[in-house]
Image: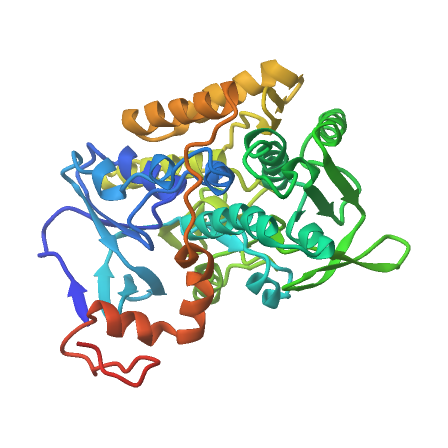
Length: 467
């Protein structure tokens, strides 16, 4: 175990957990502050999660929406980036423990910002994940890209009409923004991009089904916008089935229960889960140590200034917090991260901190199809092409780095002005890697990538010691 310490008498040590919107924007806000920042990320990149579905459907590459965190902060001399998954936070000792490939590091802090985000929730049915990947990481998006494009390839080889129908039926669970955007892009992929690419199948005959137990599309949006999105989805061939609760998922299909209690089965090879989120397990850990309440989604109840009860040095932001029913969107994390950073700067300078975090709602947007979107900006509602242009401008603005913005805009031009998609490459490793690693266990990763040499030598699934 390694302890990351700092000589006494030096500047305040700020540890930030998470390299998402909250963590990254907090770190950048501290650029000129007289503090030393350590950002601990589970991955080496900052993920622009709202565009993951475009990686999955071949519009963008993963690099365009996931620049290296270390590169982003390379010119910030008071910040260092550390790779590792945070497994423990000790509020009394003021330490954060992170682990990567068997190497454990303890980081001491004077100020802590926890922005670990949220993962996919299957509402207590985690077994669904085996057959219905979520949409929370680059690995998820690449796996789905392989499954989506692979379904068309396998259908081209099939001779049984029933098997072709199963392969060309795509089910998206969850009619929120992610589900709507994913369903719309799969429909356009089948009807525009791939329609001339196959000889034995007709890609335009593919079924795209959007399921949700809720009674409307885009529940967080105004009813008029949800109705507009529903209508547009139907026009591009998406079958929207509302009031349908998923009760089982397996390799060959999905079982849903309708509002009248009747259960039916949809035969489908490709299922995508875009319903529900679960906050990082660190929320529960923080709640147990501070006495703060934790809700069913794992979100911790914070003070109005985003700190934990009795711990003004600990700030929690983004999807991990339960405060005034804030939505789980990027803007909440960005504004929360900046607010927490400002509090750190104030404390370092001996000034009073702001007593309360005020979220400025900048509205919500979702694309439905090419040249069609919906935008809910409070009293102002937009649909169609105008909303789509607004969506483009906003998302380009928040993509990090000029290079990523340029290549993202180029990818959009290729896909939206033409019918091609520049990122159609998929491999077996992308499709099956997640399941294989889960089956082999974490010891396999350590043994094959060189964990700590002073630790016990791990044995992988083959029974051989790592070289």
